[in-house]
Image (tube, rainbow, N blue to C red; front, top):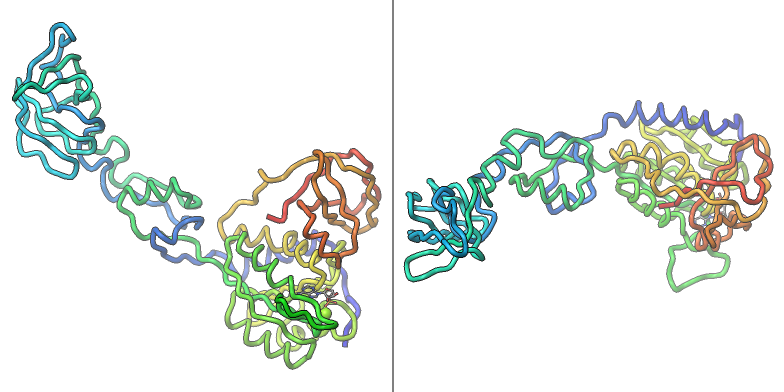
Length: 407
Ligand code: AMP
Ligand code: MG
């Protein structure tokens, strides 16, 4: 038995309620430790200090000769300095001999600079003649030497809390010898699709059936928010079957998302079930599309009942869940991906409720896709959606609109 929407709330109220629920239930986010190899894209949960000085020793930054700079002062092509080579120092080895006046050691990039030396003369400006090294250019103290701790000192912060672990950050952290990283744990989000007509996407279509697309589009959207989706399958519009599926799913995840069966029609039983095993907090939001949206709580976990229409489901996910999931994942909303373009044609909206319209970008214009919410080609063609405020009835051709991608 379906039921009429009791109290339709507007989207700003729905946001307020959702924000509070997220704060109450899921904040602060959990922290887990990952290896460097699993760190890409994760969000650092604490400031990281370097356990050692970097570089860890005075290091040659060129191939050449470690010298006392003063031995090369006034050296030139016409009047070279002549030094005696006492050692060859490869990267990874430890110098055995101290550089005294008149001496030098051959050194590779990355090798420790021997005691007594204060400059490296590049190999290009020197020549080997028997045991002697002829230096054709003067060096200054400190030349081509990266001093111990000059890059970053022990206990200084190398990467701050909240950094997204991109290749360059992972490079820096591993250079400091850090192998385990505290990151924000991914929320596990279960996905159930409901409907007698639904079957898994495959080559086998059977009459009357529809391929389940919501499980897969929502799973992708969840990943994009830095969370971990778990597709739990298709459930029939049957009270006991859905009841059992929700009961067991809720134990396995932090948040449960269902799609379909949220309207007030026959076979739409989600509301009854949530009422019986938990609490319905919102049922019905005055937006288009996506009015039959349900937010409930079961075992102190949130359940979001998205409408079945694929476009509506994805829009409601983006509008109502994405901001909070991104926040919990430590990710910022990607406003840099917003594009503002003129509308290609006049667009009618419904007064009194916020309207989200999907658009395609062509010739630097936003073209509304005017198909019903069941049309799959709406998704295939979409570049994003625009928000039309609740008091706007008509958007004129040429008015500037912000296009939010589905990510
Ligand atoms: P409902 O919200 O259950 O009334 O479903 C509305 C429309 O969305 C119906 O045409 C359903 O067949 C379709 N639909 C529901 N769930 C899905 C799904 N998981 N994938 C694709 N279409 C769906
Ligand atoms: Mg249905």
